[in-house]
Length: 284
Ligand code: F3S
Image (cartoon, rainbow, N blue to C red; front, side, top):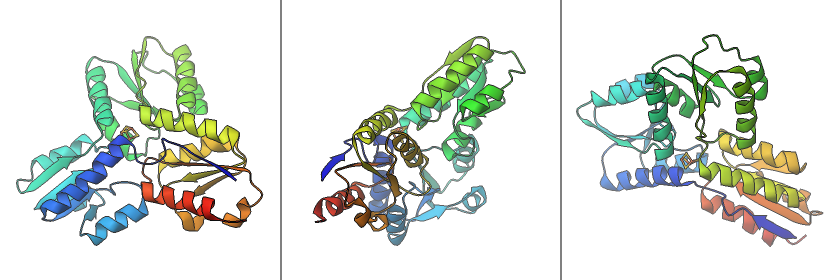
């Protein structure tokens, strides 16, 4: 059996930086909190919990904290969260927001100040998008599909600035922008899909076109992993979404000639390696 593993599988730069930051802060000691789970990966979150790291689930829990270190994860947070943290004298804030996300915050803030209406192509409920929305000085529209773009009505006629959730599907983004360009006047589009996502998606698509079965590894709640699964399924009908090696039905791969493996940005390397070893080591 041939196995093709995507080189871009696993932690992206921003996620690695955020996870490393938490481990570094643990070494320094004191009470450590992360605002939300640091990444969408149960294994990593469990390991951190065992080392004493607590997850703050909402604003109310954050308000109740009066000491320790609060780490902001790579998705970023809404402006209000920074404001709450700034007022806490005995709480140290470590901002591990990915620089690519911070750049979107800046773009949205500046463009809305110039009077442009902001359109975010992404999922309005995703924490990254919730954060981005808060940096706009005026109302924001969120669009996540071609169908939503089709039904979008430009009620203000104002010039627009379009940005994207960093992990959005590039092909879908281009389609949506094309639709909006026909409907709106003076559109300034900033493709904020990050390179890591683009590379991962392109490579996944290439491998899925060659493979008879495709394994996508990632956390249940990881939106970038779900998107990878979507992309791979388009090219390879036998695409599987697993969280760890335990979810893999190895027997069902016995008649397969070529297996492709990729993983979302929040999947640690050791989990990818375990899956790869298990597939390679199985003697059918
Ligand atoms: Fe940053 Fe891109 Fe990862 S925006 S968190 S490097 S997917």
